[in-house]
Length: 133
Figure 1 (cartoon, rainbow, N blue to C red):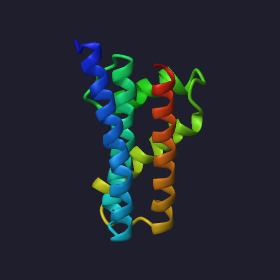
Figure 2 (figure 1 turned 180 degrees about the horizontal axis):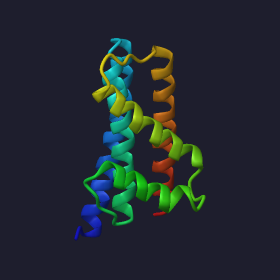
Figure 3 (figure 1 turned 90 degrees about the vertical axis):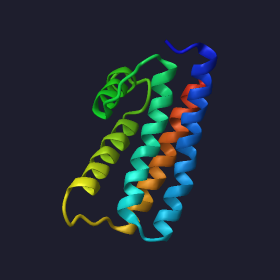
Figure 4 (figure 1 turned 120 degrees about the vertical axis):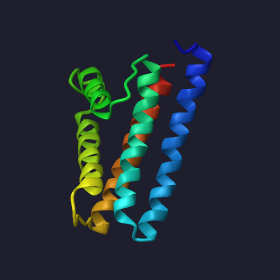
C-alpha cells in the first residue's frame, strides 16, 4: 500500500509526465513522425489516467482494465463528460492501429486534432484531481 505522501508525489510525477508528452508530440508532428506521435498521444493520456487511478487507489497493469475502470467510475455516472471517454477510446485504438496494423498512415491534420484532444483530456483530469484535494 502506498502512503499518502508517496502517492501524492507519484500523482504529481504522472501528471508531469503527461504534460511533457504534449511537447514531445508537438516535436514529433513537426518532424512528420506521425505514428510515433499517435503512440505518444495515447501514452500522455495513459500517464494522466494513472494519476487519477492513484488518487482513488485503483491499480492495474492492463490498459483496457484501467480504461474500463475510468469509464465505469467517471464516465457512466456523468462525473466526467462522456467526450473524454471517447477521446481515450479513440486514442487507444489509434495507438493500437499504429503499432500493429501494417501500412497504416495518419493524416497530419488528424494527428494535430488528436494532440488538441490530448491536451484537453489532460487539462480535464488534472483539474479534477486538484479540485478533489
